Length: 284
Length: 310
Image (tube, each protein chain N blue to C red):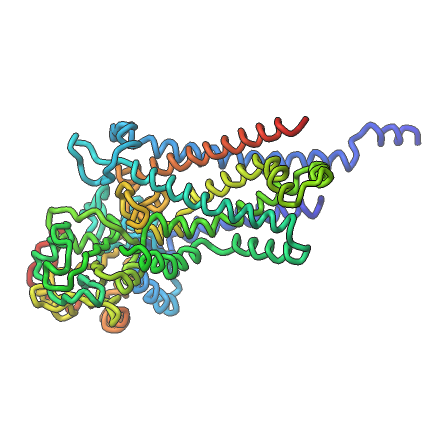
């Protein structure tokens, strides 16, 4: 009995202690939450950053929506997002500060055996809105087109639809919640088409060129390839010193020319154009 | 001397303190658990009701509507949050997986209790218990790499859909249903079985006419427990069902269950918006369904007990 009492009191004290700990150190710690597409970059950068400074960076996933809502509520210091904050319903973008840390190109991708390597923007739009349903109609094999979408609200999907579909909405079809799953399905399912960020492209898949422009980093930097987006790290309008420094570290030449490229993103320093939050593109 | 003895008997002993100490600790724990359950129920309910009170969505439109698209407005000028496709899919997947699992579970249970020798029954038991310990993400991954391509090669299409989901769930709920069925069969009084043998019945006749009949309420409870698990399983189903919010017309086209919609949607919506509240309403439906399953189990249990008690 006595032992049990000891155990209880120890557990109680521990809980109190941990709760207290968390409260005290919150101002020094930087927590970055959100986009799973940006997560690997931030995680690896945080590892290198941690070893150099005393600050502690915690990185979590959860999705762009989670990141934006957490940062605007002030519960985390950085919200990672694939999309501009004003594209997310329910977020007051004026309350947030946008820091762009990388660029991601997105390409339409098909299963290897559909027999098509190039589509016009119009054809691509017709496929994703369900007007073209067989690969034969765009010069491929006679095979039914299987459209695979990411879930609504995913940054990749929002970017793709903004660039290709305009105001029209996509055909109601199956939705997957990660780039990895989409890639796996595309490589195995005959007639399937979807879209992936550049870092996921490899020999098991067939990326499509649009109007004979190839999806590569160079075409993104001069905006010949239209489907790309920034990776954002949002903070509140008065970010903590620690958060500001970490973001600056991510934007530094060193990280942009090593880690960013290694992980398949495009450096913000290479971009020759600027995209605004209303999707207009101007020359730098 | 006399006085101190009197004092000793009248004052509370060490054991009395232990008693009250234990009482305090256990009631404290129980209070915490009750508070936890009440706050979860309260939270899901208040969040789930927001869809109907704040955004003025009709409950019937929600339960029977066919179109789920909370971010765009429909013909009547209101956002479209028809959850019927997901509710139907959830039920279909659950019923099919339970229908496949039940005969296997009963066969396993009979084998374990009547047919196998001690070693065989232990072996089967530990195999089935092993299935419980496998995390659901692994079931999902196996489903994605084995079941989906198998369904695709047999029935065409993408392979994603209710059938793939039901097959994965069947394996997941099998251990639950089996072990509860075993318990139910073991609780059949020995004298019924002896009496049956005594009347000259064969083993099969005894199993079929006596044991299964008496343990029927228990088996039904086991099946409903399995269904509760299948209804609530999210991750594994989400990986193999395809997540397309359309009314299912066919077992091999992509569909979406309540849970798979919740897991894929919750990270991409903002607290307080209709898109988010609509997901909480789905969670509320799930909560009501598990409540319904629980009540069903209670009723069946009571009836079964009443029938064979006397």
